[in-house]
Length: 284
Image 1 (tube, rainbow, N blue to C red):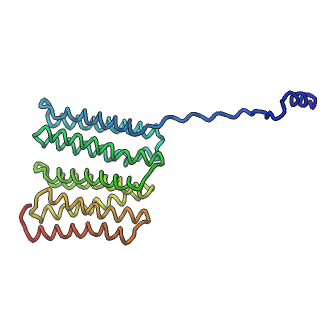
Image 2 (cartoon, helix red, strand yellow):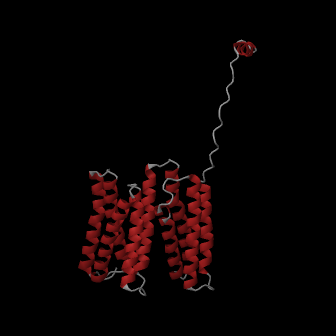
Image 3 (tube, one colour):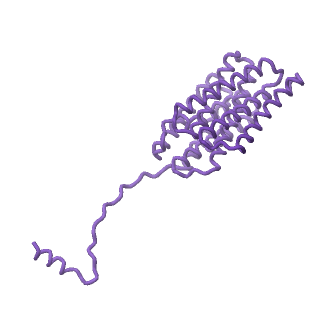
């Protein structure tokens, strides 16, 4: 055996090293990024533009809206599964797109002008892309400080639009209005709190307390303030933003004096607007 080893080593030239075979790494699947997300948002806009057809009744439009929400959610679900996004089953990845679709459809039903309908659908596509871009970046480990602002901006705008649409719907009874406000505030708050903590129960509890506070404020303002729906919607959105902002930073252990001043300023604005409405007593 030693002679065989000697003969094999003698065949190597001086300075030549023996090449050892290395195992090839397993190929990783190609991650889906902004192009795929842009395709989902574009198709959502194209399908949503057909909702303004005069041949459709409001009930049919809402049925198509539910189908569009399921289609977009399925596309995003495939994206997160393919990218192996941590916590891809968590509902917070799909809240902003679904709420954006609902808000755009409500505007399309109420708006008599096709240009407003087109603007609502284009805004829906922009919110779907912007909101989901944050989730894609976090799943790929490319989170940036600006992503938190982008997440808050998209969530706040969709929340404000839905509050306005709910409050100005005169056909809805107050029970349905306040229940809808609670659900919208709960889902939006849950998405924000999931960025601050991985404990889903804690995020859900914080969102529940935030939604309850906002709904209680909505009941008081609708009952005692003689103001338009857009006025009350702005106050509720500011109150929600201030409450959830302080809670998010408290859960994230990043609550500082500057942050308390920033979100406290929104709370002061809410108190000022309520006092102004009580003093004037006339719709704005």
